[in-house]
Length: 68
Image 1 (cartoon, rainbow, N blue to C red):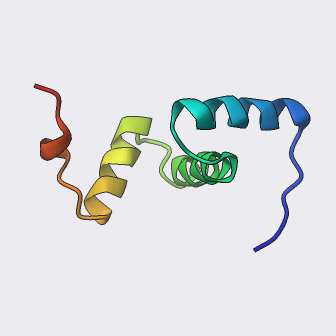
Image 2: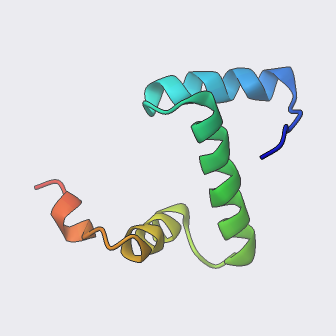
């Protein structure tokens, strides 16, 4: 584990987003980094498709999460 220096404005955005998403600031930053890495590796996939693949990898049934 190490330290990552980020711009103060980006840190503030992560803080605000973490509140909305009920994550710690570190968890929010890690989520953004992971999604960004996956998006770069899979440029033809949308954000929703990337998340769907991640749910499947974790054996979470997306159908169970669908809003009626």
